Length: 463
Image 1 (spheres, one colour):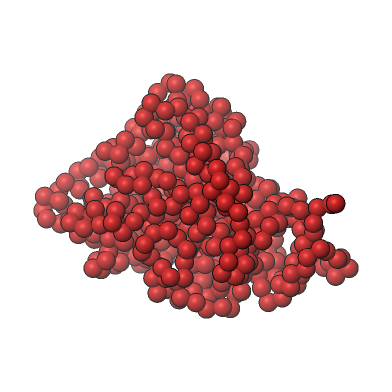
Image 2 (cartoon, rainbow, N blue to C red):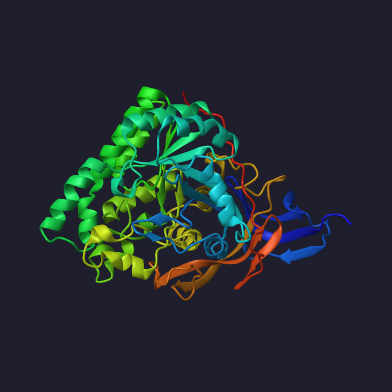
């Protein structure tokens, strides 16, 4: 018996810059053909007339089982991938912190163990270096060869054991780039933060809004300026996560024009919320780092997303319980930084972006799927509906309107940052490697079916 075939007929398919009514033939787990396929028969035929047929979302910035600020995120490899797949995401890349006395390779082993019997969709790993000694650096080539070429470091969070100093960042960046990898950086200036926060606390300025004021855009910009200098000095490959400042974006653009290999993303929440949320009575919900910014910066970020200066948009899903968020009820610096957003990202970006005319439909596909898959070494397997690619496909009703809330989402957090937001466009079906995993409001995926994605970065295009 041969592999089963599936024909998705008559939907609006997006491939690159082309938007057209096409049929998609899936054979087994991969896309076989795309075009006018009226002459074909298949084991299963799905009528997609009136629907968008899009590649599955690729979210390369999620924190599952994340131990941080005296708590652990409530999304594990079951609940996190369940929320993801309901939100049209068919591939994630999760961060894995190097534990004290643990090897860099152990970061991959930990995630293999966590995912076993739980992951509903395919997943990859970004190791996080916390101990930049020679033993760790010597393991970088092996980790890259094992399919985890994108390693992250933090430029802040000293008290959480995450801070890496600039001299070590340079050493890591050179070793990693030479091995075919890319260094991801959380760009906030630790010295400025450690000077600001105690001053605010001493002055009794402890409510959520002061989280943002203790980390103004200058904190991010100072760190990005240092990254640009590192790139200039080393010629290494850098990726700035969750960029949230217009001046920081300008620095990245100037660096790229100079020929430096620096790319940046932003996140859904910076495009949706402003720092006004932090002034609310429940403002603690929106404490994240970098903090939310003002409307002017938000519009600049949207502009960067639209014209490609910002490469892509991720969720930075960091789902902490309400009890954990309330650690910061009396002091903003005790609140775990992060917003649950892996399920919201796809719908928010379509509704706020495409439906409101801020971005085109092909650009939407690029920022949620194609660019992350390409930049992080998952293409051509992931990120597009092209022959030979994995049949990771999302069917979207572009006209359905609904209200996003804790009740209409499936994330494991017991609160919702997106409560009451009106959404245009709804995910109605999701296929992962040709298998129907979401059918309306029903998840059909078996826990543990998700596979490890062996990533290999594309060759460098800049010197």
